[in-house]
Length: 164
Image (cartoon, rainbow, N blue to C red; front, top):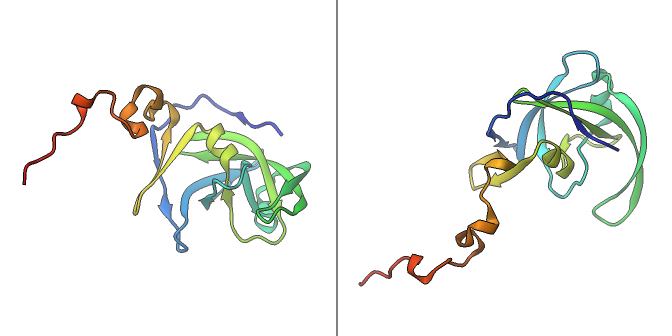
């Protein structure tokens, strides 16, 4: 199940997401098949889902997604299930990527998984009231930033304690 880039659109450095009514981090995306303009969805960012996109079958039918086949997935409880899949094109901030969409017969939510984040090369930053998806090339370089690893590069770089 190969995903790929559709165009060489210039990347927007930071996408701003939001928290949905349930408090889950989410992002507005446009999803389409090979024909038509597609439909905009509020999609939940689910880092526990390894796939590209998972969506309710009933919401996928009007999009004209191309049936791709079936796949076997492992659910959070360890059980396995076979699901229909389709090829779909996701668009965010003008950037377009094609990937495998899992069609869920009994779900009500559209989920974006780790394959979505990897294909779009995005890192997720979530704070108490902010959801950001940052271009991976713009994220801190952990190997060259010891202060981001919980240790100072040099004791002289530590903040000086203040006197009471």
